[in-house]
Length: 429
Ligand code: S3P
Image (tube, rainbow, N blue to C red; front, side, top):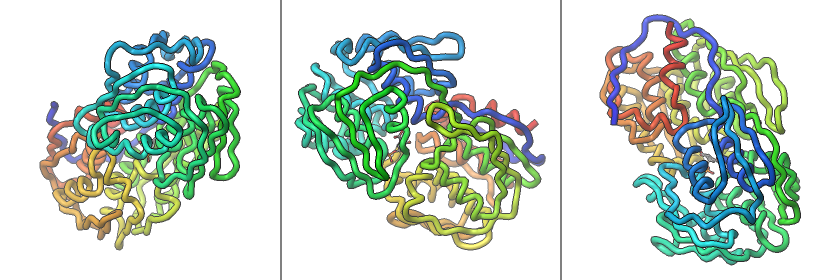
């Protein structure tokens, strides 16, 4: 537990930073590297706590994974070489590790148990367990497998044709992972497209997978082949600096090599609509993922309405978008974001609580929030709710508060952005 006291700044933010690797892509690189035949070298891997849970799970199943210079090296020997772990797998705070690994473990020929921290133990797992059971999975746990801890007796699975009832890339990925091990064909259909890193990376590892609009089909026909992966900077981490530059007067920040996969760039669309100018340069495609540099400068912001298909494209950025809305003229309304209620914490309640402590005019609704701007934020003591994105949003808010901000515990930031304060210092000098 480490309490943090922050003072407002009096100078603009300026500089160039490279945010750490994308969390979603880092998890997937470890998983596919571990299932593949051959050596996979992952550069710009995010060694935050969540991704390390995925690394340790595979180390417990006998896969050699180690650091070599700046890279993470995974010596995959194929799916059949994975061994039954002789201890329960601990997934910590990581929803992505849990959902993705459960999909995979359901189809492996051995027994596992999985558990997590108190926050993860309250997050719904039935969204993956139910489709997996339809495929023949043998999973049990609290509430018939609705919550961790879970026990998974791996078995032969059957392909499925599944339409996602929730807008969740984790659920889509869990079913696709099970499909990679199942007899026959597995098809996953989504009404609203969610992040597609699983599909992109499965193609790079030469799986038998096809995508047609929002429908993905996979079989167990191909062995995965190792391939080197470069992990783009995480746009969800970049979002805190995009927001900081947009709200601290006269600031200008450049973020290098940020992932610009269109399923993730909703924050850029929102900033544009709010009136911020974002310059995108040096765009290129690396391993099926678009990357580029982003430059954002301070601007007078205006309110926006955010709802519908854009929501999955910015779901993790909503806490910091809410902060932006406190600095925008007019009423910002966010709808269709009920998924926020089941993140690391109930992010609708947490954001409303924290921003109103700072003096913002914000009202929580069932599936979003209503924020009236522009407000002068005041210094306050807030709780980060043990949630990395609430902690970083509060730290960015402190830059424009008119007094000291105290955050009860900033240790959760290590989940996704271990060097957050070092990068913040770089642009404060
Ligand atoms: C993720 C998907 C999203 C996102 C999470 C990472 C992933 O969750 O919020 O941080 O890597 O697939 P949902 O699939 O639950 O929406």
